[in-house]
Image (cartoon, rainbow, N blue to C red; front, side, top):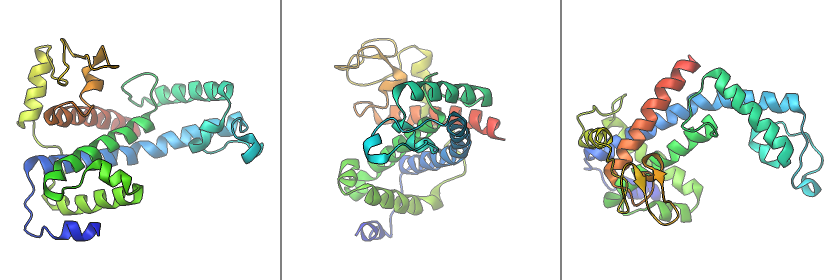
Length: 238
């Protein structure tokens, strides 16, 4: 069904922003592929050395040692705090770049990928009449299939690098940042902050990812995030 919808547009000519959105997804996928094995290795090594046992759902899962970082959430609070602190030390020792000292490089890379996928779906919505929420409601398998087919459709138009900085949304972002008035959303109050209910005082870094942010800002901020994270972490992984 999903394949049929995409195949109907045989004369489809993507817009520059649709191509740019696909490029961002490809960059985010590459970042995740670079980061994941590094982070998984040191997290699993820390778990192997710690020999911490399941602290949550023990009645259902037993008293096993947690060895997979994907199951670290099963540790009790005290053990998880120790594990988390050791992971941050390993992250810093390896020179992996994050946007906040509390963050995990793998979770950051996964978040960037999801954000770029959301942007791609949004850009394709006028063509396909398919929204992110519609895809989620049909399950992750459908979402992943749609993303995969869309990338196959747009891949021939993509270059190996991001669009040049002449793109209006990058220039707009640069100028707003330099002037100290980076656009966030309709509730913007002042210098780089957002006053949406419950989000008062959030920096532009967070705010432009919200749905009320302009599409130009979403492009610009994701481009900035990917450029910084990819360059820094690729250097450390080499």
